[in-house]
Amino acid sequence: MKNTPTRIISTLAVAALGVTAFTSAQDNAKDDNKPKAENPTELGSLLKRDESALPANGQLQMSYASVVENILPSVVTIFPSSPAEGGVMDFQEDIDQIPPALRPFFFRHFGIPEESDPFEKQDPRRRNQPAPTPREDAPRQRGVGSGVIITADGYILTNNHVVEGADDIEVSVESNGSRKTYKAEVIGTDPLTDVGLIKIDATGLTPATIGNSKALRVGDVVLAAGAPMQLNLSVTQGIVSALGRSGMNVVSSGRMAGYEDFIQTDAAINPGNSGGPLVDALGRVIGINTAILSRTGMNGGIGFAIPIHMALNIVDDLLDDGEVQRGYLGVQITDLDLEKSEALGLKDQGGALVTMVGGDSPAEKAGIEPGDVIVNADGSRVDSSGRLRLMISAIKPGKAVPLEILRNGERITLNATLDELPAEALVANGPATMPRGKGPAKNTEIIPGLIAKELTPQLRKQSKIPDEIEGLLVEEVDPQSRAASMGIQKGDVIQEINRTPVENLTDAKELVAGTQRTALLRVFRDGDSMLVMVGLDRKGK
Image 1 (tube, helix red, strand yellow):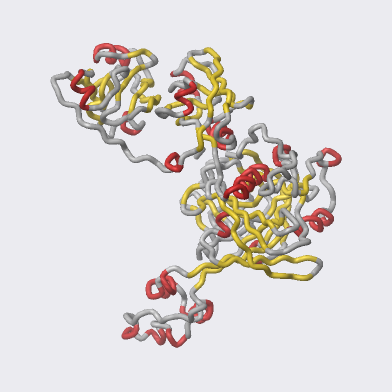
Image 2: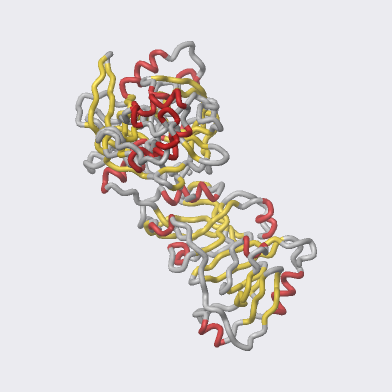
């Protein structure tokens, strides 16, 4: 089935039970407590908030019954459904995977008369018959997920993957022992964070109290509420196991959720919990349950929730125009590990190492160069490339952002005015093709598997290389070489080796010969400038 109640992450794939990277959006000096009544499309002035500290410094208590009583009236069960793909879903191919004794249940589930079983009585003459046509209302995929009411007039926060692809959504609300079902409409979704916002036509609902996910500490008690395995209004208890988890490869709308800053918890989360609230020991929502790490598909004590401040930032954008605007700097970045810091001659690790600067990007206009290390952005420390990516994405386009840079051991501050993240920035680019250089220029292998030649006016014209770009033109790259694995392509221009400009092959060979472990190349390609580190053997060959 397609609409899943939770996302299950394993070492092989992302799967779910039944139905079918620039981490938390850092707050860019945006005050979550500021009323937003001046913009009627935003919910800030309507949310019920409580960000006070936990009593008794968060010490354990003997019962959370009062906490559960506060949060459960705000928890809903979501039933998304959509047309089944391919009629009865490859009926002829899949039926033989079901034991004969269980086939009657299968037929009844999909509304297929049992006498239509093509394998009835194991008659081989019937195996090639076409699959039977089910009832008109039968071939639908139906899932179960959870959500949390955030306003009294029916706005409900959930996951994108709970409602994606659904053409009919029912929401079950229970209060004071009574249950009522509503039809819901999707207000907006964001696959890159797996946030979804839906609304039901109701008033007088009980909204949840919103907490402060930025104040969480590892070890804080949390409770997860939702409908695991269709058991609505279930609550489990655990602690915050870790903060800032990323790289979990949660899939939403067929692609990886690109912005992850998950709260990790050992509160039991199972299929059906997705979209439900993760609350603190006072019942304040601090996260939206989203995924589990499991090899079996069931809770293994490692669950993940989207921080509520990140989810609400997305909600504000969805209510504005149905789309999420993200800041765009125009760089490719990586973490600064020990090997890279040694190659750059830096003593410290941490920060985001710039490996490429896009042509005509905000970064290029601000003066950022490949090899720069961004250690602070908009007044906040940058401890990893993932953190910088989240910080930039959370800032609205058009804002000038101060960036503290480490360059050649010195700290400088540059100001970059962000653009809006273009759609193509989210799609992996295929290998670029460049005209093959021809002419009398000599060429040689400067590092194993990489053959380059000196630029001539003819080569510059043929390869459309700007006059101001100097260096060596890459003529050939062995697909099995380390240079190829690091992304070096034919047609690239090597401008620097180990931070020293190169204009001829002799200089290049000498610079590489003096390198024992890693050659640091500055490369120009199609208007972009990037930094590439190619490993060598101990002899520099």
